[in-house]
Length: 235
Image (cartoon, rainbow, N blue to C red; front, side, top):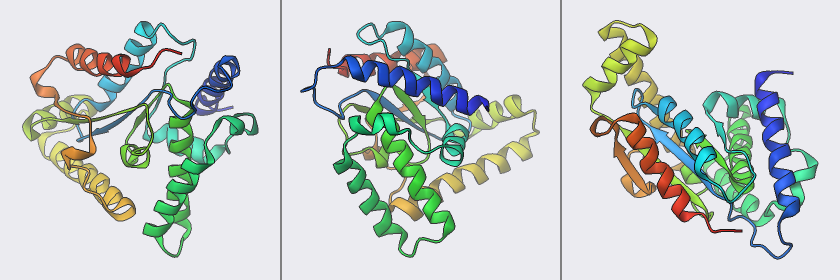
C-alpha cells in the first residue's frame, strides 16, 4: 500500500468514527475545511504543513484528525481510490449534483482528461464535506464555494522573493527559477480558467489574501489558523 493510501485510509477512519458519534439531526456539510491557493514560491508547502500541525494542536472540540491534501496526494487518491461506501451516508448528494452540473457545463464533451478533472472535483468536494482537511490547489476554493465551513486562502509574494525561495528550495539558478515560476503559475491559471471559468488571481474568490513576504511563516500560519478556529461551531 502506498503512503498516499495509508494517509487517505487513516483520514477516512478518523472521520467516520467521528461522524458516527454526532447527533442525527446535526447539520451536514458544516464541517471545517481550508483551501489554499498560492503563487509558485509563496511558501505554500511550508504554510500548509504548519497550518495542519497548528490546527491539530489547537482545535480541542473534535477528535478528528486534520489532514493535508496537496496536489500530488489528491491526484493519487483520484487515481487509486473510489470513495469508500461507508462514508456515503454522511455526504450531501445535493452538493455533489451541483458541482457535477457546474463542471459538466464547462467541460462539454468529456474527453478523458476532462473526466479526470470531474473526478478530481468530486473528490475535493467529498473531502470538504467530511471536513478537517486542508486542500491545496486544484481550484478547491471554487469547487467548495457554496459549502459552509470553509476558509479560502490565497498566498502571494513579490516575484523576486519567490525566485529566491525557489532557488533555495530546488537548488536552481536564477534563470531556471524564473522559468519554473512562470510555467507553474501559467499552468495553474490556465487550469482554473479552462475548467471553472474563473481567474485564480481574483481576490474576491478568497476570504483572505496574504502577502507572505510581510510576515514570518509562523505568523502567517497563526493568522490563518485562528481564523479557522474562530469559525468552527462547537458540536
